[in-house]
Image 1 (cartoon, one colour):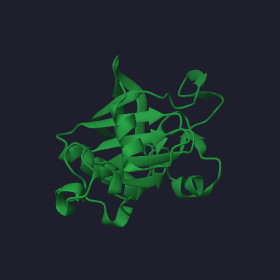
Image 2 (tube, helix red, strand yellow; image 1 turned 90 degrees about the horizontal axis):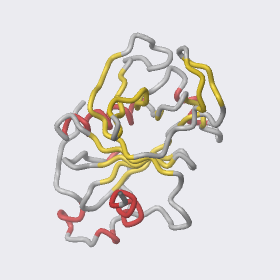
Image 3 (cartoon, rainbow, N blue to C red; image 1 turned 90 degrees about the vertical axis):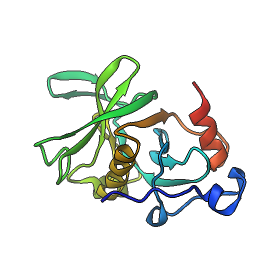
Length: 185
């Protein structure tokens, strides 16, 4: 289901971005230019409107250990980088990629990577745990969040900027602190 694109909260109510509080996911409306930020320390994800507003959700990120997966041996912690989703694929493995098999491929400055955003057959159990370092390096989200991210990707002309960071520091989560992370090169 493709979410509607509407003016940002800041435009609709003439608020300063610093006055905008978090939008509940159930009320979130995707917009052209939205960015996804992933905090790999707290395992939280954020969808952020560039000109005001954000929503947050639980994620699972890469395990903090060496793993052996699909013929590779590597340290599975999700890298903290600037990425772009440029492709979506449907995978046949419904355990690893969930009921629909949707995989949003992450690209970095070097091109296509093995990393992506997807769900998992056991995602609800994973997200309910305190320790959510469960993936082989990818960003795991619920099906509802994946649907919202896919709608954002499609609404942005099949492109979505994603930033993975190791924490937001001591600052509280606000639109302003998230916007600062978007602006960093």
